[in-house]
Image (cartoon, rainbow, N blue to C red; front, top):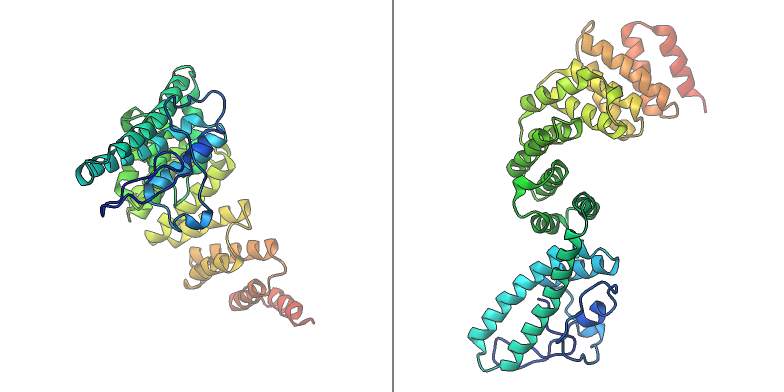
Amino acid sequence: MPRASKGSTSGNASGGGSKRSSKRNAKSSQAKPSQAKPSQAKPSQARPSEEALPNELPMADRYYELAESMNARGAIELAVPFYRQALAMLMEERDQLRQLLPEQQQQQRLLDSREEQIEGLITEAALLRVGSGSGLDERIAELAEELTPQSAQQVLAGLRELVPEPELLPARGRSLEGKALMLCGRVAEAIASFEAAYAAAGQAPEHGINLAAALLAAGQASQAAALLQPLHQRGLAVLEPDQRAALLRNFATAASQLEQPLLALQLRRQWLQLEPEAVPSDRWLGWCRVGLAQPPGDHARQEALAFLQDLRRLHPANRAIAEVLAETLEAEGDYRQAALLYRELLRP
């Protein structure tokens, strides 16, 4: 857990007063001039060598390190949730110390000083929030940039600090909440967050696409398809480029799960034309093979052949694609085109 100021001592739960150091004051002293400085912090001593620090930081220290990193970049308002989380853990540690080592009054003073330091930063950040009318969207955007599978829990904590009641978050915040929940494996909760974002934003496409992805993850393909079909019918031109690709990818996945191979191929063919490098060539080719497995004359088979010809045009150097196309043309009776491809493949 985050400790008292650097160089101070911390009581050990086994009874002895072993020394435990912290890196906090050195970093806090480098904060921007607008930060509140703790007025009663104790003078710090020399920092121990890095070898003396534990190899794996406890969770509270991780929260603190994230906060310090944001603070060093001047994003004090984003550091607040993580400082507060560290503070909560310090308070828990303080209560434990009171039970285990009631005679260590010095330890209590050090913990109080540490709480003062963090509370000062929280107070100043709160003032910054009051003075910034449009800062909420910016802070949500900053948290979105920090989102990774490893930081998802911290991003959720950050959102709770920005707006304690989830239902009061704007659509963008609910959407970020949903993404973080998905990364944490909490799919049902993510669906609820995306539904709230979709409703709050007047059914904006980006939130509908996110909601459909969560529904697919929950095995609800029919609900996802029902959500994506009207978006697709409006036309791709009204969507942003990244929204188009996500819509086609998710809608095609839903169609495949619903055993609609023709629709899945049509959607993936559109996706191929938009983003030829979106997936490896062998994956595109695998989807073609699904359609080619249909009987002669089947619409899905004809769509797969057109898909394969597009794939050949977009990836002319790929021999595997040329081989499958040559075999398919031969099976379709187009011997002239098949022969041309075979000859090309036989060239050194």
